Length: 154
Image (spheres, rainbow, N blue to C red):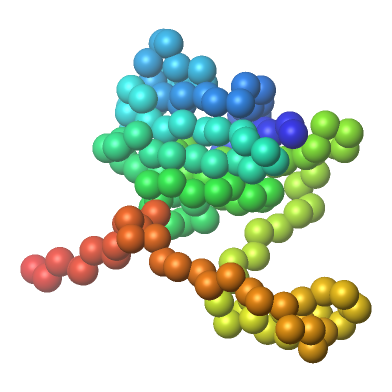
């Protein structure tokens, strides 16, 4: 899997070549982002079994995926990644295909997922009147996103 972070404000893309990289302002980071809003060790990006994961390392200015501040998250093609104030678009391709900006992330909640399963018309798949048991989805007791802060009154 090949991964590239393309700056939304222009500049050279960042190639993610290793399976685990540390992003930050320190010289010993795998990806050095020399900007005052970036923490010394800001976040970690991991490639694992076809998945791309990011984890914030307790940075001051945070990490956001598609505008949502996260502690950890999966990255999908064309996601918008904000590392503090620096903005990137995620491009992902398998080793045998070129990186393409034409794939889009779609967020689904439980109702949307159920609708898709129910609308599946291909024989042999879930949703075709078979008695397939679906595993129950349980909420993670530790949230992956930060709760919204209430607006401060003056």
